[in-house]
Length: 187
Length: 190
Image (tube, chains in turn yellow, green):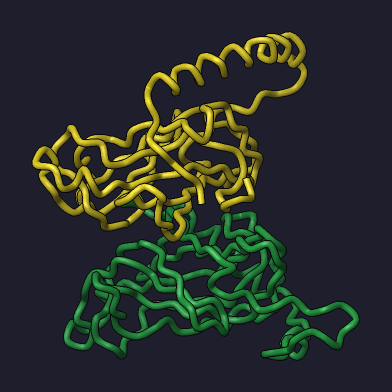
């Protein structure tokens, strides 16, 4: 069970800066040395399938966590970099309320290469406390739209859950895409 | 939503799996065997506490049905085995079952699947469009989850998933394959 606490922006910024600094020499070396080896292109939606696991209760009250996976069903490796865009949608596909907030507490956003037939993952938290606020205008979502970083359109999990019709309250939280399957303790 | 892309791949994957030779694994998989006598101790049957389960999208559309992959992962630290069909049914808000449980599609062989820690197996789930049934015999309703029992297990797992189901028992609108080794990634299923 991962502890997906919602973290101050300062920590995220610091982590992002640290990550960027650490990556600079690597990127430089890679750029100078890798003309021969092909760099996998960014994944497109048609290369991907997505998985959603049974939920697990979070340590934080009123939050339910879900492991989600993204698998590369194409014959070529491809890359995802950063956060998925996750939104609640109505039965007509209309966005409900604010999109998922970004949580990089457990994972730093980094480029993840998914080999052909391979899988990456991220965590999604759905909080119930925003739902009780007047700014929320509670409603029921009919789906969860997941747009992998750099892709368009996304995929909709047919999943019914409490959502906010009004933008403002953030009740969904997503981590960046991380390498490997989303099996707890394995990755 | 459009779920057309993977239908062909899914069917191909199932066909390939179904073509696998039916090894005499059924005879070896004696229910309840403790494994104390063999040269290598038989792994225990996977039970709910060992497992997590997944549903994949997009599904694959065919005429009158949509196919989805369900995955079952061993999240315990011990090797365990799955053999045969999972139990699958539709769940309404509040937790009750909607209509009849899934029937068993015998096109694929029933093989014992051994899951080392953190390995994954899969099954193919076919959901028939309940609009194909006479309304009076179906009483169409919206399911909010799939209840999945690992083969021969009595503890269930709930995967959040909304779809049209029959509230009335009788019409068979869910169909499952036996448990198949490997992940359910279309085109890469073993």
